[in-house]
Image (cartoon, rainbow, N blue to C red; front, side, top):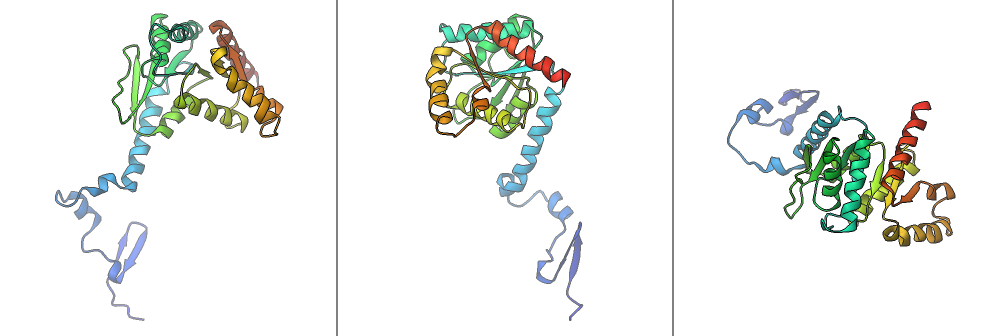
Length: 248
């Protein structure tokens, strides 16, 4: 065996022969020349993802008990759904809950508005999208995320429950992710409330008449969903779940 091959220790690793680079890590770090493609490669993305988790945890850790409210960004301010969003945000705030939304317009804005005007804490967790979408003016604490899965973690980690008002693909995505987390007991004592009974009725019927009857879910899975048009009833469900959790 030839022991004259060049070798170098690089942290916990040992490299020899042709794998030994011409420069050290420090030299490359301090060299202001060179390509910038590394800014868009996976190792650097991992650090960005880590930083988003750290920033999110740091910003939200001191929130009071909170509830996440979902709903369409396309809902107009003159619609009944917007009015319902305001009432839900207000009722949650009066019960002592911070209100977390996606921070956008429509139903999200409505819930933030209701919380703010009732003297509660209004939080918006925005997301970078191809089309510009700013945080609404009723957000007290706003965080902008690059990655959906980091944002989704924040929606769940700091919430005592979810309220889903009428919405599109984004709302459905969050709704079924929440139900999956509760079904698999990744989160416990976590009510999922669908508000806007007429809007959700066909989906609820499909869950019962198709998913349940064909054995895709069990009877107790159907019971994970609560449907109401009454903001006070929604708050009651969340408060009772919190009380049960406190005694367990």
